[in-house]
Image 1 (cartoon, each protein chain N blue to C red):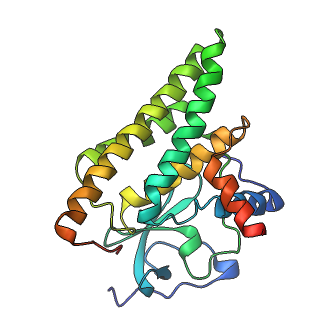
Image 2 (tube, rainbow over the protein chains, first blue to last red; image 1 turned 45 degrees about the vertical axis):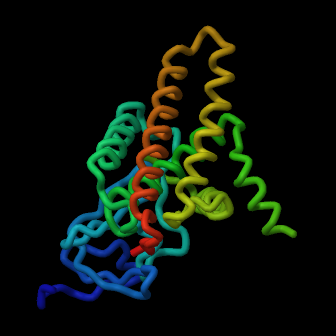
Amino acid sequence: MKPTAKQVGTGANWPPQEGQIITFKSLSGMETGILEEVRWGLLWRDFILEDGRVIPEHRILGCPKTPVWRKADEVSQDEREEAEARLVSMAEAGLDPWNREQSFWAELNQYLAYTYLRFRQTGHEPPGAAKRIQIKLE
Amino acid sequence: MSPYQESEKEQVWKLLSDAGLVDITLNDFPDRIKEAKHVVMGRLGELLELTTDIQERQSVAYSLGTLRKLETTLQVVACRSTSGGSYKPEK
């Protein structure tokens, strides 16, 4: 870890700048890393760390309650097809899908959420989603 | 790029959370892909009845193909990881 990296602030200082240390939630608890780049996905921003890990904005400590989102209908056909091609290529290359801090996981998660919103606008609901909402209300 | 308004953002966030699409766990991926395929097939069925929007039909069919490939690949990986009874936990 670079000794010059600064700890990320919250609120008005959001989003953190490149080179800052960010803290994020993982399955094993809180972890830290140095931010290299903030990149837009199909719906939300992913924070790319220097060691290659990819963390969605909403898992980062200090992130506003509702992070910045894009509308599904603003994703162009070219962008969607590029994302689809990348996903298939990563899957076929045998990338480890068990690691949720790698780009395969991050892109797959965004693609499924995007697909849900894209077709929800035309009135289609996945049956499982409706069931989960019902269960929550009971 | 025009982001959502604040209230709209909250609604979308809740919608995706309720649908289990924010931070999907690996064990849930097969179900989420199946659900996505279901909605895509529903839309494709509608489009096949129309003769006008061929471009959208092709685009939806392409997305369905992507989901099928992902589903197949993830199934193979899951089988490989669990063969011999050794379950590989999420990292």
